[in-house]
Image (tube, rainbow, N blue to C red; front, top):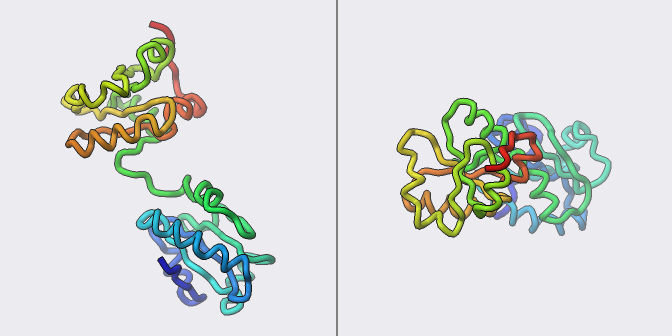
Length: 214
């Protein structure tokens, strides 16, 4: 996907007033590292289409923007969220580094629940955590109020996860990946569930309550 070029007269409309996060690539045609970065940005633009907007700014054609960002070396990438810079990186960086930089600002998918959101939803009694770890681990420590449906039983016990009481079932494992795929399969089968971003590890790290013992 070609990265669109934004000029000074378009910057406010295309970047500062954008609905979601925008990654601004400040570059110049003569810059070799800038050219090496372009295909990486194209890959990210394709993968995060609808979640992240990427634009390019030619620092020689838009000197006012270059000065406003205090550009001293290029390529320089600035992440804009809600109309203000929130992060930046200078030089040729790899795809992994850029994805890690933008990830916290991407809009959440419909089936994602963050640890902070889950804490609030639990207080409001609007969710039921579903621990997909093995029974022994669940018995030792778990999110308060969680039920246990081990991951190899989730699909065969899918009907138990239907929110018949109006409370959304939120799957969690040790990490995100342990529950995300299961949640996607259940949703594809017509059962409305969500999964905990970061899993139990992030829940604990973020200060979530932990229930221990039988």
